[in-house]
Length: 339
Ligand code: PEP
Ligand code: MN
Image (cartoon, rainbow, N blue to C red; front, side, top):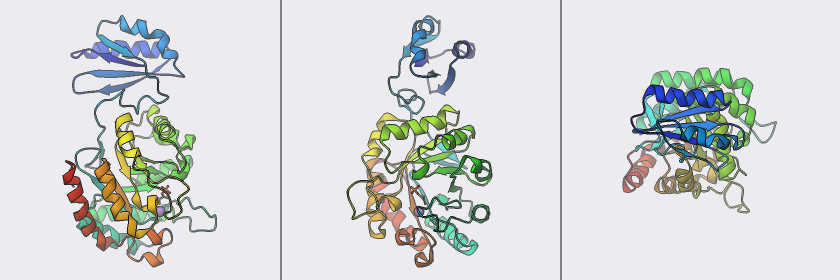
């Protein structure tokens, strides 16, 4: 249930509603729009509805709206305006398209530094790199762990690029949070509720990837787990789903972009690297993603793909990124965005 206050409601009016929400045993979630304050009344099931009239009778309350969806804070009904997340000065979700790029997994210090410098020159805004890798086989390279986080932090120091890296386990959140500017939750953990709650306890920007067999509604409920704990800095990333198609690694569901933009206020990114898993198809799908309304793209790059310890087959060269961005810029401009 959402309580919308009249425009011009005072701080004391907001406090009175918040106090009543708490007294009734619910959690208040505030959203301050340009004109109005909106307060989400969050609790189990639809129990809050029983108190609708009580809130309606409060002097500065304009309207009380039930939310029928199983997700609330992530919903456009709760917050009409697009959420823009500040990642060390890089806005994600605004007019500007954000490009994130870097290796699937961090391998050597040298490779990370070379990649980061090249990406910075190309105009990429955020550096990606896996330190803890969720590998399908237990015998595949599992990532360098904290050593990789140190290399990423060094690359950030030198280039100024913020870093995004995956956190796989609730027990890793403290460590990864100390280094990362964005906590990535991978497809394989998209519905790991303990992890989602733990990331929700931080205030670090989080990028929640779609599970490979997760519906859009389930995905939004997963995002709700993070936001319900108070972390409002959530972005969503479409990375392909499982279908009967075998020509590509997954099927990049670009339908999800306009659907999410309608249902939610959160920034939407697209990962064409995992979505197609075939180097030659990544750029066309990145262009399509921007045309469809994505707020950003995340692309895997490696200076020597043949020697990469994971996903080398789908890695672009960092030196290609300059031209790739040039092409993406044209699409961005065609749909009223900047890059
Ligand atoms: C990754 O970004 O390297 C990754 C493992 O992605 P996903 O979780 O989408 O498979
Ligand atoms: Mn990868």
